Length: 187
Length: 428
Image (cartoon, rainbow over the protein chains, first blue to last red):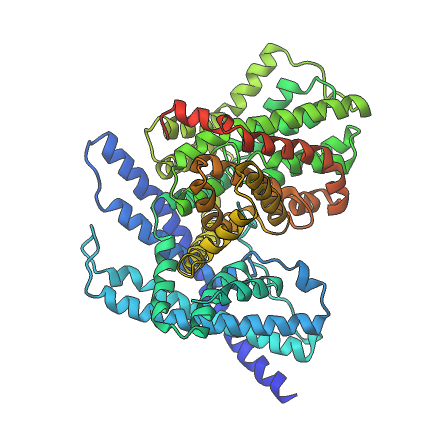
């Protein structure tokens, strides 16, 4: 069927991109996390041993944490690691459940577009604002926000087209591989 | 501004949307329906600023420290130490399970990590020793909720950040309720062990054996001392303490126990980053949602309708606990706190409840909810680790759940149980 093939082409083009971007994001985020620990330890060291505070440490660590969150988000979304309540939906017939998935998918694509547009504005406003303690503009920190939303949008589109395929023929869609990093919700 | 977001949120959640997206779509949709696009900007800035916080950084650090200690194999030494302490009493291994959870609680702030680590180690050996597998899974799940109540605690860090109370104060307030639950569980276990004639795990350990077991687990057991001493003594902020704990876990794993290899570190950091990022996004989106709850005036109308029912604070507290317990059956602790904290806390603090007291009641209640059916993450993990059905574990869990509910009632009506310690330490 034409629609099914069309969706298949789009989803299978996006798959390798999303996979590569997602995995790379987590790897960079891992490095960021390690650096954050070092920065905070340095801050303690300077305060207690050298009696001098590192003014920039907190701002840098915070910005890296936000970057980390955006960097892992695409893989988290694609591997279904975000928490949801599936109990009710699982009780429904397959087609109805996939139909609800399509509505959710469309809503997610819409809200990600909204946030993407707003994030460009945030970045532009950041061009004129200097960071509190580091010699950069806030736009430097904010740059991850539009980039992150674009990456998330690509994942959302892939998942949406996969859901259309599943709606047409539930047997034609193989599940995506779960990521190999996560150990579930740590709270 | 309308309450459209509320219904949109309920629909999305019921349809199985990831909570993080339900929390972002619902307010956006509400603003769209009300034709107020000027506020879209506020959504993004709440989302960004919700994650851009130094106190919140304790969460990724504690997760990383937990991952490091897990790969260093500290679970084994903690279980050994607990066994040398209490293995000789009737129902010894069940008691070992609880004591290990208490010790584990001082290292990690996560019930799920506790269930999976201790469950993997203890459930099989409990079965070999004559316990039923479902009882072993039930005690593992029931005791693991101590994890986020005894500090450090992931959900308390998030609560403190969202509701602007002191993390240190909250940590101090959780210690006694956590120990009460632990001792309650031990008492129930002792009774059940006698009634069902559960075995002893071994002869009483000699003093030397206990000393050796303590030595082996000593490096791990130092972590809570560093953490709590540092935080409650005012030497570090919780975030700094978490960074110190991470560094300490790294040193222990690499150089003292030599169980972590350099090449494992990449994977450990990646896993911790992924888990932390997921939580950070959830916090950011919850604050976006909390913003629209506030500006649309929903918090006040909920408060109004609650006070319309009764203004008796004792009755309201009972209703609160019933409501939270009900919510906890379906929603996990983190999201429950992020979504409901901003709605409920102002109502009760306006009625004269101490913010820390309310925080503890809420945190303990939703944490116990982690182990209640039908939706309870801890229960699911216990089921997957043990291979038993959720229903079977839940049935075995009834007596443990009863004692936990009893403790919730106690801490609800006797604020001194949670507030004495923070007062003594000058944290409130």
